[in-house]
Length: 486
Image 1 (cartoon, rainbow, N blue to C red):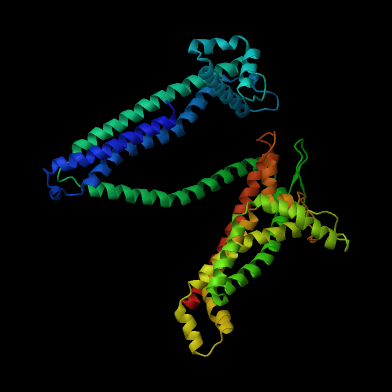
Image 2 (cartoon, rainbow, N blue to C red):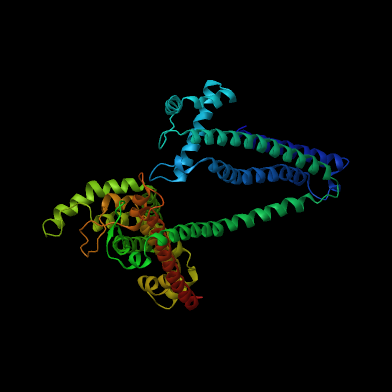
């Protein structure tokens, strides 16, 4: 039974339980629902929860644990001779999963029995051709042990799905019977329903925290693997970035960090003044008619895909800067440059700064404006000396959001700034950023356990630490000015 069908059955049973719960509550009231402790709908909700929640939790935990158990058992069938030279056990296990999936497709299309599947190993060449016919790409030729492990993997997976289906449906039915039997006139169904909603809110609030811990843990673990293979001092203090997958790599972070900061600085240098001044105009000076047209037009920029911005940088902005600035002044000959990526990224960041700053400025109490006008200040003086200082914490938050967006951008940098890792002050030269190199190091047919691949996690960890530092600085500024104006 597929997972989708199983979930549909569980939710169907829960819906039926909801209806039966309401009817049972009305029956228990003797025709007078006022005698019930809780409304009939709460009784239905309690039945729905007892049917759906335990079964869905079982499905979720089972789907997380089953692959780990199966792979740990199947991995023991793979011997060292089955691992190709220069490969790894993880690569062989990927082939095992692909072959197992292909066997499921072949069995489904051909209506083959388990015995016929078991006898397919007689001709591994024919098996490989049949798997290729269903779109299964393998890293190497199928070895007998790999095929046996695939059959074992498929068998255990199918058995696990059957056990999961039976267990989940049985648990849902048990919850149905138990919750129906509990319904009486004195049953506090409202407390059960509201208690579950409270737990749901707590779980949702913990998602962000747990996600952050998960991200940091994954970065730290893989970064430690990298630093066991490559010296920390060379990574932190080397001024050269030159990965060579055949050995002799220089993996210094400074050229990438410099490119990231340079491109982000150019983008913010363009986006912050334009976005902030447009926000001041829209909130303090523009008429309602002008605001109703200009504000949506600015916000349209936030909905344009970054690949479109990248094409704009590659086809329009880059050649323009090359032909009218770089070549005439002898500053470069390439259309890919820091200035190209920075300007286009700045255009993309304008709505982040403008829209958020506009909302923050509008949130400043009108009493502060009226007090300033009452003291004889002009409109411009009120904006400079009252409104902007009061809105500064929110404006700093908007700029921080724009900075984080600039630091994490990849596509515009690839198409606008190039992929050259270098230390240079010339904004018309091609450079690259940390995010671009993270993508390039993790793509392609490379050995995952090599320093040249694991360096992507170390780069990600450094980027995380850097953005965390920006958050701390912004928090300090916000707290300082909040104390002054509250």
